[in-house]
Length: 328
Image (cartoon, rainbow, N blue to C red; front, side, top):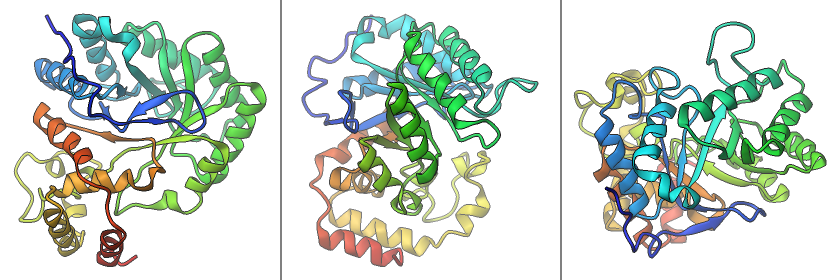
């Protein structure tokens, strides 16, 4: 029987999500990879319990995570039932809908029909009574934003979720959605953008909108799917993500200036960190992000990632050096 570590809250940092009352652990565990039907269940359990023992309270999934789509939610539901149910009120569990999930005209995008049906399916797969956060996973240009917002508002008012968020929205789309939801009395609490040292689009207006509107943020792909580690400095390892992922391909690794990654690795080494740890610490610099989503294939990676919080803040000189390396 699993008993959570008694000291799990002693070292983790918890940041307020925008101007809401919600706090998130500085690092959160994403279930995008390694929680599907083809993955090892016992390893999944170990990753979830390891994360929680280290103070990670936020677990992020989506309707289409797998493979097969839906299997990550099913597996997380099994883990909840088997070991985590006693700790449900200590957890923030989020799911999302917005990408293709089932055949036909109602299984994708942002209509009221799709979002509410998808939320109900996700609750059934996880066995949960509610999600703490439910996201619209991407903007839908063919559905009026007012309809999408009304569906999110209904999901909260019906008790299916406590808070709502968006992901992959532009600054202009985020502002509009925030204003619509605010008028309905269900504020937009969080935005989940892609962000790392190599991909910094959120600095071009989105962070300004989030600060103005009082919206929290949680970044995904903080390690650029493994590019911001030392994994690929000496070639592409067999069975690495670049050999089996449609998102990080061998071509993308080969077309990345690995000399810049090596230079970043040297900065991290001077700090007494791995490059991955420094990349996570960089994402949290200045307090602009509420949390950073980490992925893992084994518990030891989670332990190493959490150690990123032990290091001091990056200095102004180090931040300048990083920008110089990346040509910013």
